[in-house]
Image (tube, rainbow over all chains, first blue to last red; front, side, top):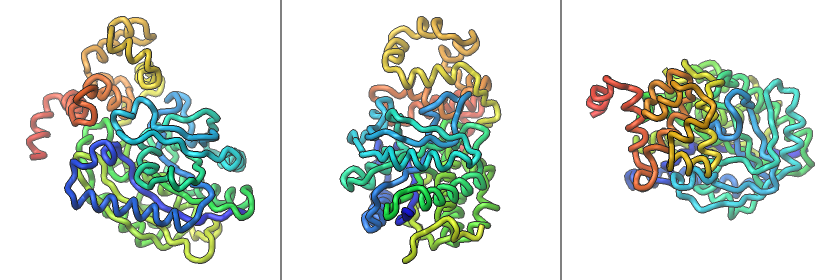
Length: 293
Length: 108
């Protein structure tokens, strides 16, 4: 019986590393504080493994044969992918993987109805893993990483209910199928509003973003699932905002818990609303059965 | 508009992925685009749209919006333009066509 000891979520965008300093000092400070906050939560939780759930950005499978979730089973996770290096401008990283953990979870989640895949070779990582790894200093925490790359943009897209249910199943698998005493952190990587490659490429829907963060802090997961639907995310920026489904996976895994917003910035040249949250798991480790949804 | 026209079977989707995944193909594409396009199994309309940077046409044929942004980056975002807004601007100009100037003015 392993435990979930931390649950956090944050945006990723190439601008956060590639052209971070184009934003005002104040906006830069807000983002730094938010990621420092994520790091503090991770450090305090002393995880053995961090599951990073994030949009695959159609980087690891053909679009006519596209899985819902891809588990990174590699011994090491190296990045960023060559193609993204000039854009991200982050130091190369080489994070320890946890093939046993990833493999057991993949097996345990086989009956969820989702299209799952495991990748023994190194996956192609872009900002999905590279940005949180860099901004939270994952590499020097020495913690093992299991990347879980997600389909947020290729129809049929698993919607908010599917992702919440997958999160619950993930928590069950962590509890029932991982070694006793193993400490697991969950990091949702993605969002907030943006529309890469669409007509609103240069726009951020700040109103949606603030509403989403308020909704999470309010903490009613029934309401989140009823109102912050995949369709609503698409309205707020198609093909990008739905990366918030990675946050929904985390929420499904921990059930309703107090949520704190760590900050928000809408800076147009990052072309993505940037925010982060952490959930308070309290004294008792989270399990999948605590939720009311 | 995004995703409404998306066609997972469109070969241009595979082509943009291959450009991203295969550094050699990318180098050949930059050196001799016509030869690479001629050698890749896709329709003449797809080849013409890529050659003409007609992102709107590619979108309407079914290229995934994210891959549109990646193609724009490949053809407009190298060298000094890396990390600049040049590829996004070129993409938007094509997507919005005659509405582009009005759109930019409205954003102030």
